[in-house]
Length: 393
Ligand SMILES: *Cc1c(COP(=O)(O)O)cnc(C)c1O
Image 1 (cartoon, rainbow, N blue to C red):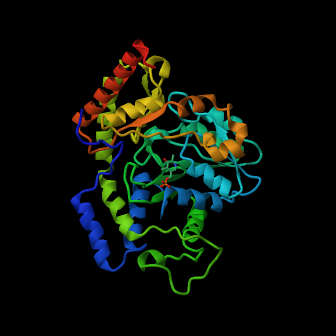
Image 2: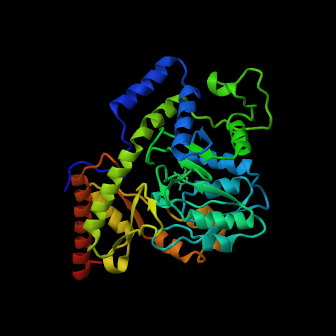
Image 3: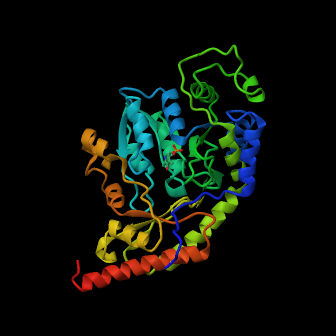
């Protein structure tokens, strides 16, 4: 057994990254300024999008985008329940209605067919999730949205660096990336939205900073002109330069990070192929580059001999960290108590919600670390089987 704890994720931060943050602190300008502008330019360029807009989190950008798109009482937002609950929460806070769709049992992606079936005349926005860094079927989903006249907003929180049919996610539709420390690159906390929609970009830039008028000078000068006026009441969700500089330094390493994640993922797949009851997700059928944000397995109690809770405890005892991404949104207490009509209607989501477990995956992990995870899984399962055979359960 390893003698140090292996967390399920850890950002890769170099001494140069730390020095770059120090430089921002010493510069005298630490809030939104040139580093944010440079990060926005770099993300827009990488994705092939006209605009990129940084904010304090992916959640903040979801809030701003839903508000900018006019989501409010009477409007429905269609998306998978298998997502981080931040998205459904923003819909609720704006007075909108979440319409949840089931996810594919083995990829956890919502299909164009499931989305099409959930759209009604009240639907305003569709939010697919590129779960774990695998792209949703964008061609199909985009066609459904165009046919029905609803806005497509991609939850690309896991998907910076993901490709769909040869194109980088974020270049075609409006997409939101998260830069939370668990994600493939980080700004500490933060997020970036990409879009080709000029009017939406302008509105978001305003809403992110008090609703103040935005002009071309804002990006060259530091901050707003002192004469800028409120065009509509807005929020305070601008990203500080201290944070932006970290993501700006991480972005050029993204491909290297993903290659390393891909190698760890391949090792896990090889080593777990013959382990009963521990089922990795499937990759989507369409051509893609997976960002390998999370490595998720499902613990099938009938063949594993133990449930997810016991599995996670067994790994923890062996110094291996795990997580759950995610408990399906509609199964959270508030949603059960206030939006209870969804329980039982999303069978593949519920099956996975009770069984998924994220095992360690981050670029600084060694192959030996990954083999420690495999070993801990095998020992945990063997222990459970001995207990079952001995009637100890
Ligand atoms: C992380 C995450 C978000 C929110 O991003 P934050 O930057 O943490 O606010 C949204 N959706 C999904 C699927 C996520 O994993």
